[in-house]
Length: 252
Image 1 (spheres, rainbow, N blue to C red):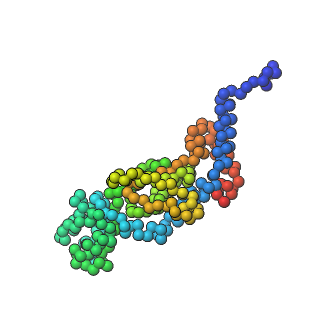
Image 2: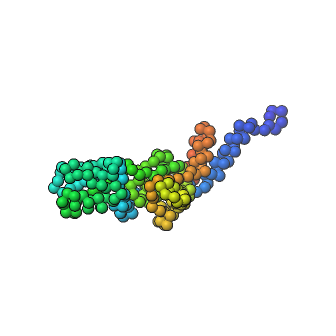
Image 3: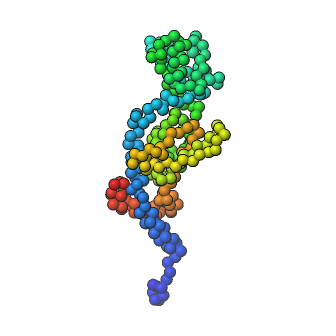
């Protein structure tokens, strides 16, 4: 009320500020705990060898991958060989050997025969993956980009390999798009329940990826809102989130 006793209305700027403040209160009270639990547990078993067992052995080699050959008691042959445009590697005195379209164990068997060595003494691994890729979109660490395809990893394996998801990621908004660009099949869309996979250990949607698959991780309304509010009000917005009970912030 003014000095003359006349009630004054708040300015449009003040109204807008209070609207933003009210929206912030509503958004902060959402599923913060669930997202925090997923983000925290996502990377907890990153180096679990049991889950990725067999992935490397089923990788299909193509040009221009680089193979590493290890032959027992033969240092000269034990080195890296690029897969050339014709799908072969050049073993120099032993000739060219076609490896394209084969897995590392199958290549090791072929090379053992070519070199006249017992198969147990010849080891092959893919040292550099250049021929096939996956595409990442949305709230993944490092933002959207292509990453090498290493074999039939699960979606969880891929997210762990690239560093996880951002604090603004929405675990309930994760999808895999299988484009089938190399075939006549129609594209497929798979919904990935990241919360069920990471927190509840339910792997029913943790499907194995194929080359050219696209993984999309959505963004929370809270994160989207915060990116669009004025910089001067962001500290207040974050303070509202920090003011929640510890059990909610930690997902307990």
